[in-house]
Image 1 (spheres, protein in one colour):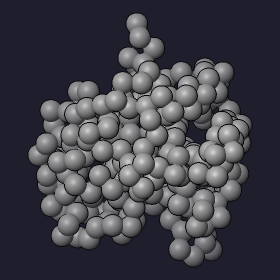
Image 2 (cartoon, rainbow, N blue to C red; image 1 turned 180 degrees about the vertical axis):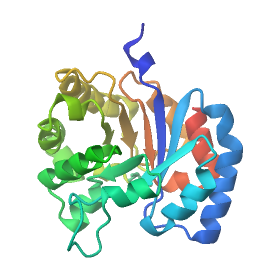
Image 3 (cartoon, rainbow, N blue to C red; image 1 turned 30 degrees about the horizontal axis):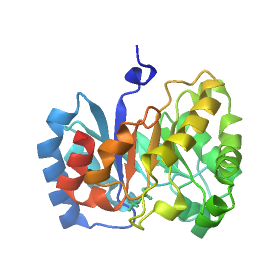
Length: 250
Ligand code: 13P
């Protein structure tokens, strides 16, 4: 048996701070219409801005598409103005929460330890954290890619085997996000193989490792052909139903 065959592919959209009631309704209607035939081969999900989670829940609850949030608080409840807790996400049917997206690391100062605490908070509520890692262009050019990824993953792996067995990892090189510049399949595979080795050392061979960064319908198949790429975290292209569905079909 191919070791990848028990890792069902996962194609997840990250809408980022885009959309609105009307645009979301149309996007989800189109996704719902096209997703059914894809569900045997891959898990489909979207991560929406917090205010729209109720809309997403009501529109997708009878579909094959699951949904989640783009962030989660590390704290359970209390005086954390502006934050959204795991329990609140559960109230709106979220299955997933992105943690440590590079935009949050860069713009909101999220450290590796904070990211791990958020992953822990998600797991405690039964939500699957999608732990995002990735190096900047400067780090890549300095040959530090694997060291950066290991550093970012460290506190998450330290949560222990049981926790790690329930996460998803997304490798998103910062230089490939929103730039139209994708890592080549071989470049991505090298990093994914290193992540896989870390996971395997904790018996978590089944954990899915997604690639993200300018994934489009026309480059998805070559990325998905790599043995350690188990799906994609899609930004811009997830806002266009046909493009997103074609990525999932790949
Ligand atoms: P793009 O697909 O727009 O490059 O965004 C990738 C990303 O950041 C997904 O989380």
